[in-house]
Amino acid sequence: MASWLPETLFEIVGQGPPPSKDYYQLLVTRSQVIFRWWKISLRSEYRSTKPGEAKETHEDFLENAHLQSQTAIVFGVRILDYIINLCKGKFDFLERLPDDLLLNIISYLDLEDIARLSQTSHRFAKLCMSDKLWEQIVQSTCDTITPDMRALAADVGWRKMFFTNKLQLQRQLRRRIQKHGSLRDKQP
Image (cartoon, rainbow, N blue to C red; front, side, top):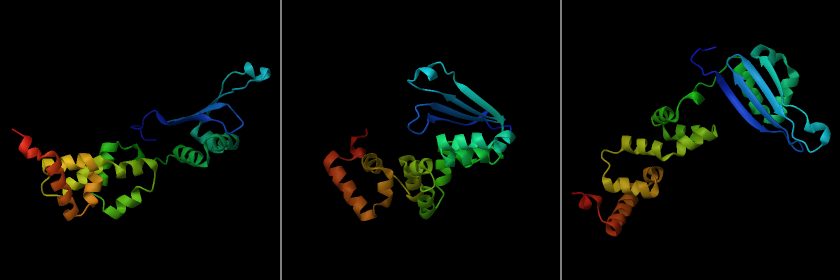
């Protein structure tokens, strides 16, 4: 396993499926899968129940059908598939990159590819809709960005500014200048 990976590869906590009130934690480290549970019950026979923990190596987790089924029941099949891939050494390195680096990479994609990427996960949807990304895209496609354009982008957003055609954009800039005055006029 790559040594530059953090000690904790994945962690998730959650409540068991109804009617259970029990809480669970699943932690995947570089060498182990740790499954913890806390029984929550009003029944007197369960009040003294202590929290439990099951630790398995990655190899043992891949062979432990009971622990895999518990993981699927509590956290879902998608999480189980992700954990199995981690145990097999298959990492999603793209997910581990910081947002700023991903935004820089995404800014070089075609619009169709950005649209497709936004459909792959919640994180990429958020990144593909972010004002920071669209500011980079507008800056790379426009020769100059005036202070009035920046002010308009602050009002309507960089994404909307990018998809607005030039005539509409010029109209919006004129209206904004008439309403608020030009930022160039206000600078000393």
